[in-house]
Amino acid sequence: MTHQERSSTRSRRQRLTELLGEGDLSVHDLAAQFDVSLSTIRRDLAVLADRGSITRTYGGAVNHHGVERSWLDKERVERVEKDAIAAAAAAMVRSGDVVLLDAGTTVARLAHELRDRTDITVVTNGLSTLLELADAAVDVVVLGGRLRRPNESLLGTRTEQALRRISPDIAFLGVDGLDPVLGVNCPDHEQAALKEAMTECARSTWVLADPSKLTAADFPYWAAMPSGTGLLSTGAGDRLAAFTDARWSVRSAGTGETAARMS
Image (cartoon, rainbow, N blue to C red; front, side, top):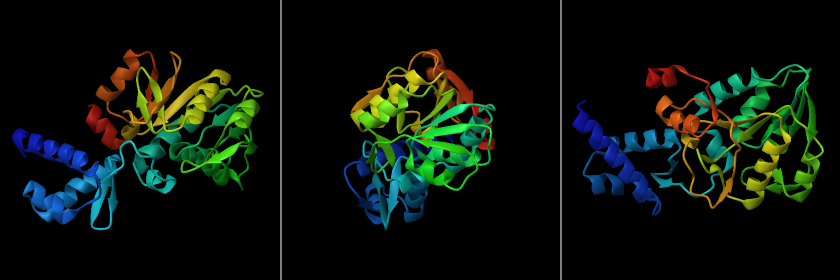
């Protein structure tokens, strides 16, 4: 494939994402719009769905940029990367640690990695994390509060009050989108406030972000992250460099695919 063809494909996929932001469109409509075959459009949509840029629907697709997806939709995206991030995060947890786990699908994968630890205490506001650990050996403390859907998290004044009584050794945050300077992009002001409170209470904070989360999600609220906040991702080196420049502490969890992109 030539560079010109690759550029054409990138441009088409970018325009596809923009068109889908205007509403749900059928595969046949998209093929006619770009004058390409149905198989080409289906291949484009599969790539965009794997990146988390769109959600496939029956016979078509919709762009969810700026719209909060369901927990199940998020759970299907970047599974290999999320597992790699979770394994790397679990290796950072030391014996005796009090570990704060935020809500989120990648954080829930981390909870699965910690199931059999009997030498730590997990504190969480995430329903998916709580369900993952419901029958596990690890000691669990649940932060109370109001259940927020669709990200299945407990938040609000009561959650923050409970959190302020704890001094976690390490916190792992889930995110919908990130900006190196602005911090964590959030769909809810209480969610943003709670993430900031988590960073203030914990001795060390790490954001867990698969490659699809390394850009803002067009939500209206931001949780500021202090200088030195950790970022654990499988993103390519050029995308992580902006966070390093903004004084994040960046670690690459690494997968075979990611290593190839970074070499």
